[in-house]
Every structure is written in structure tokens, then in C-alpha cells.
Length: 178
Image (cartoon, rainbow, N blue to C red; front, side, top):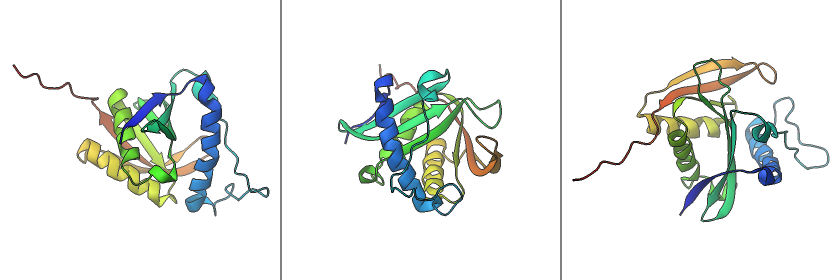
């Protein structure tokens, strides 16, 4: 299985928007009972505006592909809870058929290797699957060297999140054999 993280272009905005509807639907499994997560009367989940990932500096949109097939998206930015944070997972989605097959973990590792520095990954407290996934991925990537905290995130309105913070040294160069 070939897992690729591909920089999304302006032409990919509609693709991310379309996938965003499935992302919202998928999240409703854990957050659907929270205010603002009600199922729309027309049955069509809305996607939130993500155009800032194509318009603002410090934001990077990616498509995820498995053996060439579209498999999800990853959005990273430089908006942490403290100025010490270099990178933050804004949103991360792998479609159902590729979940629990190692795709998300491999994509996360590729992101951490590509963008070195201090990272922050947060999860909605009700989203148990995301909490388990990110703790497992970050624990493996850092050999257990990360901080976990409950924080109130200010935007778009104050809300609680579980936040993992860790360092990524990037990909180590291969050893040269002489």
C-alpha cells in the first residue's frame, strides 16, 4: 500500500470541501449530541469554510492518497495555544474504507517529518476515537515524550480540548555505510 501526502492546490479546494461533508458526518458519531452538531433537516451535512488554508501564510493543505486513490485530507497551521508552538494539526480526515489500516498514522508521521519543531494536536473530549488514535500515534512517534493537557481553546468560541504537545526533530538522515 503506497500512502502519499500531496500538497493541495487551489483546484483541490472543492475536493476538500466535498470530503469535509463526510468528515462532519464522521465526527457526528462522537459529537452529534453537542450543541451545533445537530443533523441538518435536509440530511446534507455542511462543510465549514477552509479557504484560509489556500489564502493565508502559515497554513498548509494536503490531500491523502492510497495507491493513487483519494483517501482524505490533512490541514496544518501555525496556530498553537502558546507562542512556543510551531505546528498544529488543524483538521485531519481519513475516509472510512482506509481507517484502521495504518494510513492515518503514516500520514501523521510524514507530516511530523516534513515540518520540524514543536507540535500541538488537539481533540474534542467527546471524540474518543480521535483521542485514542492521536495518543497512540504521538506516543509511538515520540517514544512517549509528549505532554497531555486539558485546555480551553479560544477560537472560534471558547471550548475544551485535549491537547498533546511534542517535538519533531524531523526525519533522521540515513546512515552512510562506507
